[in-house]
Length: 461
Image (cartoon, rainbow, N blue to C red; front, side, top):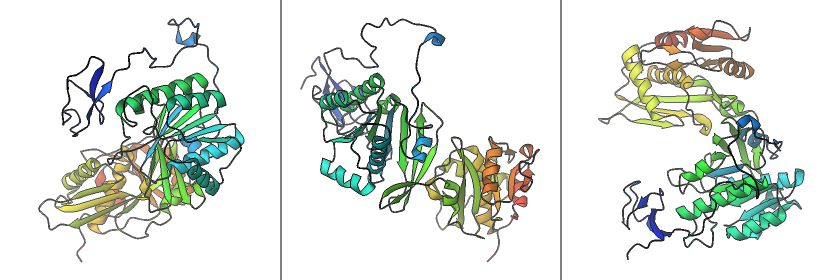
């Protein structure tokens, strides 16, 4: 079939354009994803439309008139923290996560609480029937007179319901199942997701209604659809956690209205319950006196959290040693093993190494380097670290220990949780923050291992 002038070939996986149909996409490497899409002939707006009669001209940023609408609460302190202090009117929020992790539960609870405290909420369910949503709302205690529900996938009808109701919050579950009828493409395709998101963006900005959309994820854990979807929204939230455990973590990976925070929930029969003290949760089941266990204070946005980092170093019968991580970048593990072998003299290169950040937290900051290195050495030498000591610092390739940011907040959180001592960079312990707390300054990784009571040889069994 020859290509028509008003059509284009697009990969549904990555959105790349092709000159003709092909079974293989050269951009993303996926098979059978290139489809023919019809180019819309009408000149529809792509961005935020200005009010009719407005004279749009460049002006100095200080002369732009605006009235900042106050935020309002979602009814959940953890979600308010992740959003930057509450829901911003006119914001556009994308919520992603694995199937069954609790996305619909979270948004149903949000809808019920906002409907009771603020005003009408429109919940658009394109995947479930109204009866299914009603059963979930009853179970969660989220039934309210202003909680309006419709099972619809047509974006034109959703726009009409939106204009008629003028809700405070619009929830669309999910963006991959709604469609625009004037686009001859299946729901979930690149064009449909992009155009539906663009229309929802205009609806949010022009009506000052906060819009929450649910996004499906691929088997790799990324939001399904074109990458432009994450660029269009104001906030991207990922809902993580093990489906077979009761704890869930919601993390902001993009937020135009605040810092990148995390929130912790406990899943129960009545829905999601806030966990205000995340440090206590993550440390509640830690082993006392076990080698390879180290407590590290990390900063998530503006929030200090104590996380247990566990390491297991064991001999291997394979030719190539394995490196496995959970919640920590594997490249960071490989780097620290090389530093321990070269600068400290621990021959760990031929051993399997497994590390984990407990509680499902993903740590991606240099302050965890020293704690992870001490945990690896502790497991290798089978020497436990004092359970009332926290370890903070960045490790360089020369084996030096470097300073980290926000040390005071980390120490205060550790002292609040009952810890008595911290091993920190020598340059950062000039002033003792807490008189009842001991700071041990170290300049090198070898000094840190001695301060933690770890010798340089592996114990013989």
